[in-house]
Length: 177
Image (cartoon, rainbow, N blue to C red; front, side):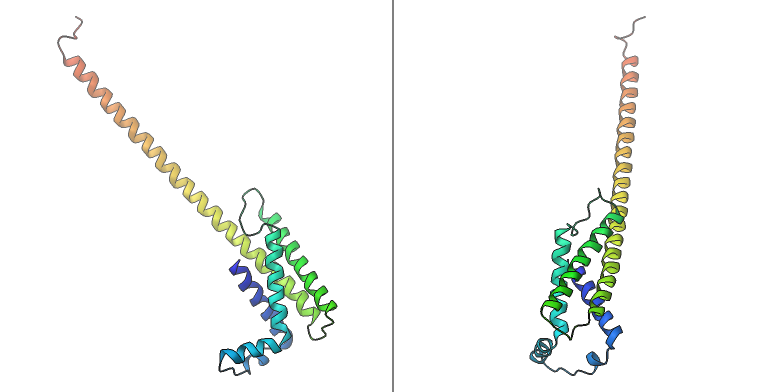
């Protein structure tokens, strides 16, 4: 979930910066935490960004995207990501419209949604590949260890059987002839 928050925030900041430039962020000199909080309260974009992050996290939770089920494929998981991000983006645009805020660019919100679909689906696909590789490697290692134990046990059984047969054949009281 933390990775989603970071990716959504970075994606929204990148789209905002691509649309309006980064001069506003780089020109601000803030010397204390209180000034940083005051700057965040007076700007509308950080507040809507926090709302957008919360909406995306809740939409992803409703789609059960914070676990990697093996029974669904990567394409279906990407579809669920697109559905969750699309729903959160529509809700954010609706909230901006209802609040009659003219400062927030709907174009930035839509492009942030498209960026978030790509980054979140890509992150989940990479995580899926990692989990599958790890599971395969673990299974192969455990399988090889299992067969080595079987082979060792069979060899020990064979050696003990051979020793028993030799010791029985060397005993004169068992001799049938």
